[in-house]
Length: 474
Ligand code: GLU
Image 1 (cartoon, rainbow, N blue to C red):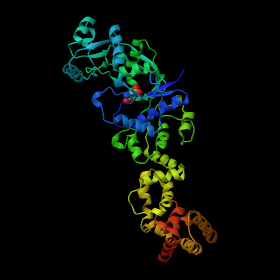
Image 2: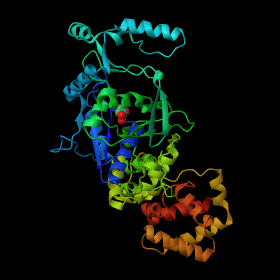
Image 3: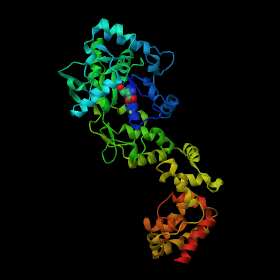
Image 4: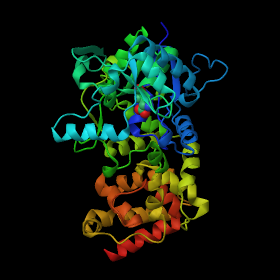
C-alpha cells in the first residue's frame, strides 16, 4: 500500500509553529515510507479569506523545504488542491447522504438557534442543536429547499458510544450524546470543514491523517461520515499540544507563534524543523541535531508522545546557534551580511568581524549587537573584569604578550593562537588566567566573539596599544 499523507491548512495569513510541526510529521512519515505528501488548502470559510495568505503559505513551505507531491487528478503538476474549487464534488456526495437519510436540511433561523443555545446555557447544559428539523419528511424538505434558507446537518446517533483507535492516543471512546448534529453545508452553499475534509481524504486516497490533538473530538463525526458513505477511514494520529514553558497552551501572549516571525528573526529553517521534529516525537536516542535526511531515516510514527511538548525558546536558540556554527564560511558570510545595520564597521575587515561572532550567535538577528565590540574602543571593564586585570599573573601575561607581538610582522587569527601558545610557555599561565585578561584588555568584556578573529580585526598595532594601555593602568 502506498502511504499518502496530507497537510491541510486553512490559509489564515501565517503558519502557526504547531502547523509546521503537523506538516513536518506528515512529510517525514510519507518520505520515510516511500509514500506521498499532499498539500490541500482548506479555504471553504469565505469569511476568513485573507488576501495573499496562500502565496505566503506556499513560500513558507518552500523555505522550510517541505516539498509536496502530486495527488490523484493532479499528476501533471503537484497541486496544491483548493477546496474552494471542489464544491461540486462535495455537493454530489452530500446529496447521497440526504438521499440515504444520514443528513437532513435544517431551516432553523439564526435567531431560533441562538434562543435554543441561550436556554441550554441557562440550564447549565452543553450547547447543541435540538434536532427540530430532523423529522421533516423528505418530500417537504425538498420542496422547502428551493425557497428557504437552510443548512445541511449530519444525523448523529442519539445514544451509544463511538470507539476508535488512534496511533498516538490508543483506544478512544466518545459518547454520541456529546456529539452535535454537525452542519455539513452552510447556508451559502459552501461545505464545512468536516464534510470537505472527509470527502477529500477519501478521494485523495489519504492513508494516514496526522494532525493536532484539537481535532480529536471531531473524529466521531468523521467516522460517522465514512460509515454513511461506505468508505474505509484512514488511520489517525493526533499530535500532542505545544505548550508554553508554564505548560499552558502555546499562545501569542507568551511569545511568537508564527513560523514567519521566527524566520524574520534570523532562525534557520533547518533548525526550526529539527527543533519542532523533537516536540512530540522521541527518536529514542540522546542526539538532538538531525538533518532532514536523518529525520526521514529515523522518524517513527509509533514513537509520537502523548503528553504536551514544551516549546522552549532557549532550547531553540541553542539549536539555532549549533546550525549557524555548522554553516560553511561562504554560506555563513552571505547570510550574515543580510543582517547588518548601518553601523560603522571597517568594511574591509567585515568578514573577520563576522567570523569572530559566528560562534556566539543564537540567531542572525544578534549580529549588530555582537559586532558592537568592533566599534570604537574596548568597553569599560566591570568590577569582576577589573579584578582579573589586576592579578599578578595577568600583568605577566600582558608583558609577555607585548614582547611576542612586537616581534611579529602582522597578526591574524592563526598568528594569535601561536602567540598565545608562546605566552603560555614563557609565563606558565594557562586556561582562564591566560585568556581572560587578554580578552578583557582587547574588548573590555569577559565574554564575546572568538578572540583570534578579534585580534585579527584589530591588527597588530591596535592589539599592542590596548594591551599596553591595560598594563600601564593596572
Ligand atoms: N484545515 C484544518 C486545519 O486548519 C485541517 C485539520 C485536519 O488536518 O484535518 O487545521
